Image (tube, rainbow, N blue to C red; front, top):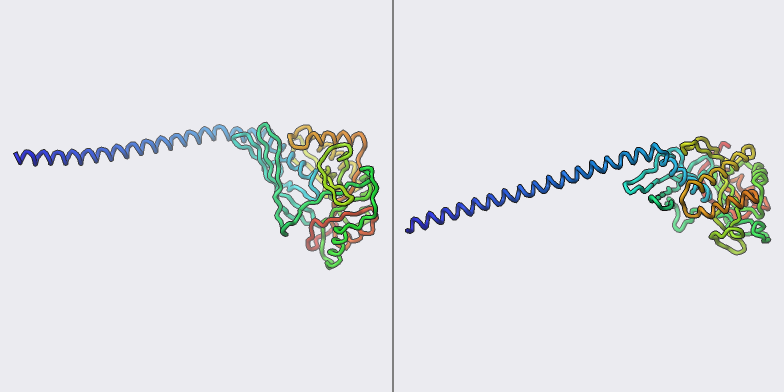
Length: 344
């Protein structure tokens, strides 16, 4: 009897051991099965993703939408921000599109200081499928609390006002800064004019100096005829205006085809014509904040003609100093200074 009990205990122990081994094998088989299922699912999803995103990306590039988006962002930035240019070496090849059909691009920004193209940051832009272009500028700041861009002061006569002699603090600070700098440096400076001027008139004055003209702010009815945001400092009104730049043209695929480095009297008409073409293209093809304002600006310019009220220039500091003798110029701002590199 005792012998039978011993045998039964052995059988129970063996069965228990066998059940544990079987359970372990079952658990591992289940784990492996789940793992293979997860891996297989991920591979299928990845394959389907590639089947979707590759044709979308290829179509995006071949359809010209990539170059169009880069052009759109470039035109927005360069037609509005004083002293800033977009690096065009990769233009038309940086824009991308994600699975949700959101377009995205990042473009390098620089300032012309003398013959230097000084990198100052980048612009990042996005546009959702049925949304508007949103862009943000990330400056590489050298100084704490540095304001990297100042708007131009609108000439008082364009606003129907008169102005007394301007001895603004910022202009005096600039002349003191340049006075203490020895020869061998170039700078970028922008200033405003005390009256609205024809582009030809302002370029004629600046042609007397060894300088390069990079931008002219265009008055397009801001504040008086068109409601836009503005700032005031004393008797002066500062607005974000459209900017007349050296001629730059695009081909049918929206890729840069040609451009000039400066505004000159000899090809000014070409630059003005291209300015209108670029803004018209922007209004027609772009979905962006301020589009309705740009439509009104174009209508104002077509009816009243073009007046400018300042300039962004670059050149040797000794040559820039001579501008303080021009009675029609005021509200100077120093945008950048570098060691000598000038062969204008």
